[in-house]
Image (cartoon, rainbow, N blue to C red; front, side):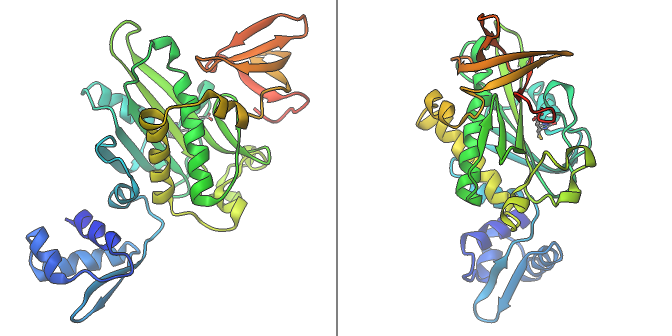
Length: 325
Ligand code: BTN
C-alpha cells in the first residue's frame, strides 16, 4: 500500500495526487491514507498537503526504496522482481539462496548494508550502512558456461554508463571490472556462476558502488585507494536513480543493443600497458595486449610468451604501483 502511494506520488513528483484518488485505487479509507503519508514523512519523504489539491512529493530521502527503484527502472517486464532489504549478509549469497528456489532471471536484490559483503578473490567488500549501493542481479545467459565471465564485463560497461548519466562522472575500467576515477576505486563487481557446467546455470552479478561515502566511511586500509560519487562531485547521489540506471543500461547491453567488446576495450585502462599479474604470492611482469571473447586478459610476459589470464585467478596492478590491487 505504502509502495503504491510512493509510486503515484513519484509519477506526479512536484504535482498533486488527490487523497480521493489514493483511497479509490488502494481501497483504503482517507484516514488510512493519511497514516501512510505520516509514516512516509517519518521516513524522510517531504510531502506537502494542500486542501482541495491533495498530496505533493517534494523530496525523496536518501534511502533505497523499492517503489522508487521500480519507478526509475525502464524494463519492468525483464526486471520482474526487485527486492530491497535493510540488512543482509551479502546480496550475492541471498540471490544464491533464491536460485535453489528457482528464482526467475531478472530478479534484482538491493540492500542498505551488508554484514558479510564479499569481494573478488576472497576479499571483504566494506558495506557501511546507507552509503553505498549493494546490489545483485540474477541472469540465465544463453551462452556456453565458459563464456559467462564476459558478463562481468557487460556489468562494468553498464555501471560506467549509469555513473556517467546520473552523476556526470567519467570512469576508467580496470580489467576485468573495477571502475576507477583518477586511479581510485569507485565500484567493484563480483560475478559468480552456480549450477552444473552442462546443465542450467545461474549467473549472479554483484555490484558494489561507493555512492555517498565520506572519507571516514571507508576503513583506514582503503581510505586512500577508494573514492565515492560524493567525494568526486561534492554531492550525494539519489541511490535509487543510480541503481535503476544500472539496471536500465545493463538491460540495453544484454537484451537490446548488444555488448560491444570494442567499447569495453576503449575504456579499459589496463590494455596496452605494463602490468603486474598477482597469482597467489607470485608477481609476474607482463604487457596487457587484449581482452578475449570470454573476458580473459591476453598478456605477453617478459620471456615473450603470450597467454590468457582469467578474471577469477589473478589480480592486476599497474606496473610500479604497490598499492593498487
Ligand atoms: C570486488 O572485489 O571488487 C568486487 C566487489 C563486489 C561487491 C558487491 S556488493 C553487492 C554484492 N554482494 C557481495 O557480497 N558482493 C557484491
